[in-house]
Length: 328
Image (cartoon, rainbow, N blue to C red):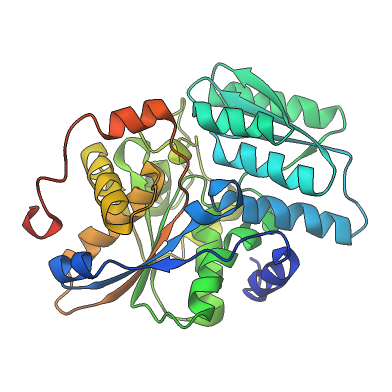
């Protein structure tokens, strides 16, 4: 496992390239929930999501080691693809990204706009396989989570929040492949040791939760059906699993809850929130309701890239008619 200090090193390394994203609060939400929620909002990050932190840290680290490749390849459900495209453009590297058919249209368009060659595939498994084929021909595969430098870079978001003086009683992050949760765990170990870190995952995509509880990695046969497109991974990696096993727990979130909290966070924080981000909030809300006293909770909001078709799905019905304090 990595030493937690790698997160501080990553933050120094990528500082010239990234935004220090804000911490937001809603006094109304705090009053309703009888807890204090702090949100690290990565929708304000370059390329609109936390993924750029890992991609930049990996590429800048390779440059510092004198082995920056001329061509990189990546597979993704969306945010990692545009993060790789953005990072490659900053370092003048050629990028190819492979996206499955169910990837967000806006993330596909952004990846191309940043200069990457976009290759469409039918499925997530096909995107992974074709990426491996391109690596065998000489391209450098920048994995979305199975990479030490990517994990360290992802942890810089939580590092910023804790360095700003936040002292939470618990930290929540969404889990897809596990890089975001792993980096968050490392940052907590560095600046707030002993603070429990929890992961949340869509119930329809609960391979990581099942892996956590069973003690061995469970792999899905096909990309799960969930509105949280950032969590449509097929499995975690051995690399991330060792961190996930150290988390305080996992929450499995139903689709209705994901939509509910996407709407409410968008309304309360006055910013765009991806459904994948809302998964973490749904887990935090479930945990908060079980606490006997008020707690301070840091919720890591992973991104704010929402395609028109996803926006329409989110707002197909009004979930704002039931306030969080009245929800069973």
